Length: 165
Image (cartoon, rainbow, N blue to C red; front, side):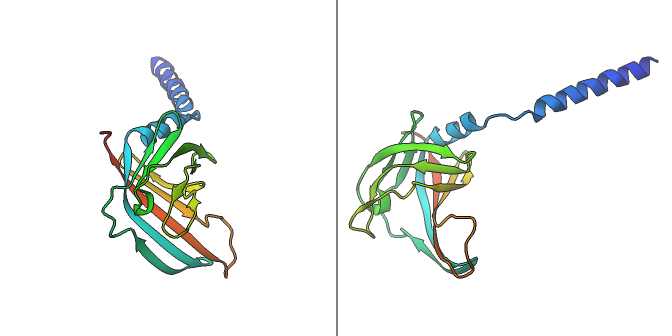
């Protein structure tokens, strides 16, 4: 009889423990802490051109830039990008998570070398990876559905965490 009551007690504790761990927890604070816990230095910039789902070409960009390009996110939801597109500049803007933290949106406006005007390169960025030392963002033609003949361009930014100076 003691064995049955002990078994029931252990089973009840196991069910309670599993129920408590299965409750939805918010990752917002954790992701925000990861993002704002240091500066992010650009380590690679890749542009991939597609027709439908097929890759037409991939180009590595920014390979000769001698300036450190730093994306910095602050806890007050402001951000800055130093030396975007290898041009000496330090524009500031705001950032936020979107769509269940799968996307990062920033209204930062930067000067770039491909256009005579300013652009907002991170207005909609898909988060491919956000870890303690690596941040990968994709921008461009990110729609989920596309036709087999549709031309698309995806730009992927890879950043490595740098400790705050």
